[in-house]
Image (tube, rainbow, N blue to C red; front, side):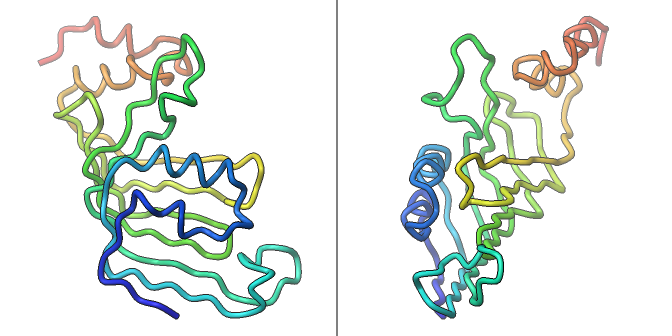
Amino acid sequence: TANLSRADLRALHRYLPLTVPAEVRAYLGEAVRAGQGRDVSWRIAGDLWNVPFDAPGAAGTFQLAGALDGLDMDYLPPSRQPAGQAPWPGLRGARGQLSIDRAKLDIAQIEAGVAGAPGVRLSAGTLGVDSLHSFTPTLSARWDARGPAREVLGFVQASPLNALTQQAAAELAKLDWP
């Protein structure tokens, strides 16, 4: 068991066990651009060869938890962006609660700004990866967005969400919003 009063989140990828695939650790190294962890607790119990203890029947504990502050994160860093695809706007100045339990990563209670949309605030957010140990991890994200209608729609329209919604945001943006 270890406790840290603060930690540089840009180094998070270096604290993960080597059993987490190098590609996942590299992604986190690119995606996390800034931020601090506070009141971080870390607990490992069991045979270290089995960390993060996510194999069926594996006995042991691998847990990390703490508060996040000032997190700047790009979900899809530029080096991983498909050519010609609109970028996903990143989080800026995010606060939340980080939890890693075995190979599952969760960030809850996220409040954040959005890159390129200074009037938009995200709240009640969650980010998660079911298995950091997977060679094909999937990032899930959910939150509420608030701000001027034009800016929220602009955020959607300038991201891959525009294509996923069949350009509905572009049509809404044409309306006369206050």
